[in-house]
Amino acid sequence: DTEVTQTPKHLVMGMTNKKSLKCEQHMGHRAMYWYKQKAKKPPELMFVYSYEKLSINESVPSRFSPECPNSSLLNLHLHALQPEDSALYLCASSQERRGRGTGELFFGEGSRLTVL
Amino acid sequence: AQKITQTQPGMFVQEKEAVTLDCTYDTSDPSYGLFWYKQPSSGEMIFLIYQGSYDQQNATEGRYSLNFQKARKSANLVISASQLGDSAMYFCAMRPIYNQGGKLIFGQGTELSVKP
Image 1 (cartoon, each protein chain N blue to C red):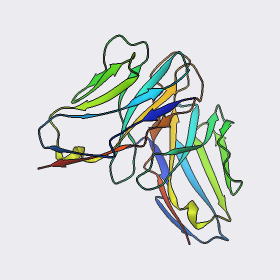
Image 2: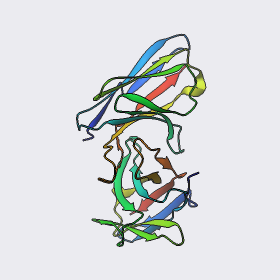
Image 3: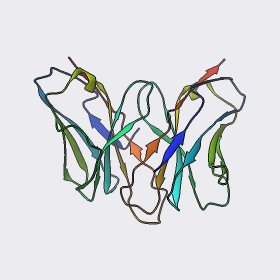
């Protein structure tokens, strides 16, 4: 079982809805990530939080709004999405100790989003 | 800039045989880590194996081994004794080591199908 938990697993929303994706990890990792993945394509980085501060925003449209309330939680708030935003949204976390460990990302099972 | 290239969109292998999945990379970072992830149809990205750029020996993890040729900038994954459960998408990925919250970027992936 994955140690990164994402909810909900499936989400269907209209273009005018407001919804949120949630991610939780209890591994003590201080970096958390959101990736977007289309079918048969590699994951694309959206946001990186390091020590609860947004460190990377890959020019993601403002209809996606990330939030990191504490070191264990990561949210992605969704508003006024478009049908092309339908995708698998993956959350991940990693240890961030310079020069130590492999730095691999641990991924959740993802949230499959459909925008109608 | 970093780049990962996987030139095999799809591969077939007979059960119990070995298979090599190709990965080449390009980076200006002096220290970097190379990763392989497996993604079954369920969506979860499963970490398989890691190779650090300064590691002298090729990484091995059970049936997985990484054929690391630094001069050629290649990091091929070898799966020995293929099993039906190995059927999945496989992604090669890379990130700088000494960079907190550094980006993990992925190749295009290889879809592996194991035949009984």
